[in-house]
Amino acid sequence: MRNVIDLEARLVRLEQRERGWRIVAGLLATTLGVAALSGSVWKDHPRVDVRELRLLDDQGHPRMLLTLTAEGHPKVLMTDADGRVRAQYGSEALSFEDRGTPRAVLGANGVQLFDPEGLKQADLSVGRGESFLTLWNRPAKGFARIGISKTGEKFVTPSTSAQASP
Figure: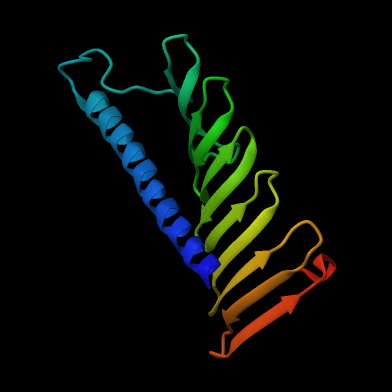
């Protein structure tokens, strides 16, 4: 039961971080909007058109990028001093990485948590009338899933074999 409480505390922290990233993205968008609409600043250029906006550190390395995906969706990337993506927010999810290895992904239908090697250890999924939590003991130690089905039936699915993992 303690692990469920620890997981819940981690989810609360991740939700707080997501709110912080949304605030940063909102402030950035507002600042750009005010700057672009300010006719007194750019009388000859009332609008700024760019494919990518980069915030640079003192050494000239990009630390935050506002860009578009190949499909044309907006995307915000936060990088470390070595240029590796540490967090990103796109149209589908907010993800946190540790030197290129996924650590947490918050999507429209759930949350996924990863171990230091990038293996998924927990998946909280909601949608299509059912909700469930899947926990893995990797590598090859099995999984457990608890949830509520579309009909309201509660279920628990334990396994000792990773081969049968969902």
